[in-house]
Image (cartoon, rainbow, N blue to C red):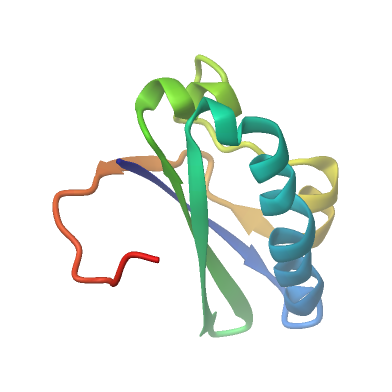
Length: 108
């Protein structure tokens, strides 16, 4: 299992709308369109950082090939929709990818 980690930063005013967008639009769309290609799910992490709100997304896939079904061949580049770009103030240009070695979280 591979985790795609990425960070985007919003203003405090845009944080609720961005969180809703991730939870109610983006990730349900990924589930509907690429679950059969290896998309497994997501986690959203949030923290206040000075005058910004940082969001880290952890998006789970079965393999790098599955990630490419989402992001294309340049899979390390960030993928943002126009709506996401309108809600974030800045973002990391690249995502990182990590293999899950072990977890203590209960399986659902």
